[in-house]
Image (cartoon, rainbow, N blue to C red):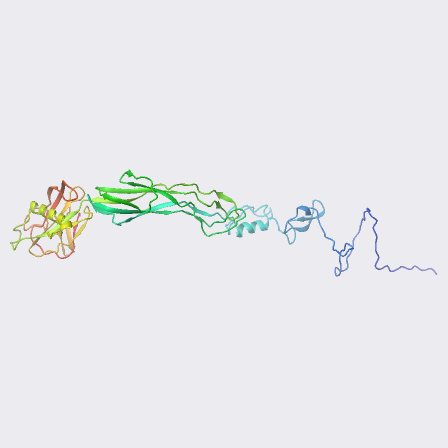
Amino acid sequence: MSFFSRPNLENLQFKQLPDSLLTLSGTTQIVSTSGLKLSDGAGGNVVLTADGAAAATDGQVLTYDVGTCMIKLATVGAGGDPVYPSSCKPSSAVSVGGIPVNYTLTGKTLSTILQDMLVPTLDAVTVEPLHSTYNINPADTLYEVGCIIPSLQVTPVFSQGSITPYYGNNPPSTCLSSVPRSGMPSSYNYMVKGCTCPTTTSNPYTLASLSISLGNNIISGTVNYAVGSYAVYNSVGVQTAPELPSGTTTPPKQRILTGIYPYFFGKISSGGAPAGVNRPDNNTICTCIIAADLSRNTNVNSGAVVGVGYSNNTINLNFNSTADDYIWFAIPSASSTAKTCWYVSETNKGNVGGAVSVGGNLFPTNSNITNISTICWSGQTYQAYVSNYQTCSTAVMQLRNS
């Protein structure tokens, strides 16, 4: 009786001859990966590589390539960085984070999309250097024609601009909240009433004995600044603009001091006369104006007041008169509109105009006084309004154009 015996082979080892090729076919079944270890025989591990490993980058995975039937390192595959499928919509329909509407999705990896969405490239905001205004001392901007300002101090207000934030160069070496766009001011250019002053480094600058003319007295100028110290970079360190070269602010900035002819007003006692009697005439009013003009320097108590203000629209006057006083006011013909009504309250108001008559309006039609001259100016015509009768006026009265 014959029989067949089968040996049980265990721990079978193969020895491969040098420069020989070991070809495996069929299916190799690994029952358990527990304890499975590839060794180089000298106590070291065998490093697995794949096609394309020489150009590998972080985040790539081993994956099967259908085209070559090989396992390769690639940016796609399970657990890797998938490419947005071409079968889906090719661009974004809404803006999300740094991704705008119509952002191209097709062909981009998930990490690229997330990077653009969550960490977009940001540009710094630049503000160019600016000469914003002048500060002046004294701060008044309204003066009587012919007035001499003995010393007017002018202080240009200059800003170097900014780069916000400052990302530094490539790669960004620092990130400051803001740095100046330009260098410091180097000199100043001033022009006063159309006359150019020599360029100076003075700030503030003092104008001596400035005489005020009728209308706009313009003080203007520019600032010269040095080259900036910083170029402009975006958030990834790419330069988007060079350092700002030296230059001059434009357009020129200006302050306007306005010269006007003043108005005058006051009260004149009738000496206890009946209503409408001893009413002041133009010569008397002219004398009061001159006295009021002198009182600015000699403290003459003329009973008249000089009002350095605009009188072309409504003016507000407090005559502070008694029942024995005539009240009057005079406005420059060259720059004022005739007044047509007066107003204290809804129950105390009336029209201006008409004949000189004790029974007429509080103020009749104005009469002109020519060739009025003061310590500041000369040869001006004024519209004089003198009340028809004595009146007590202790509240502010408005003289209106309509």
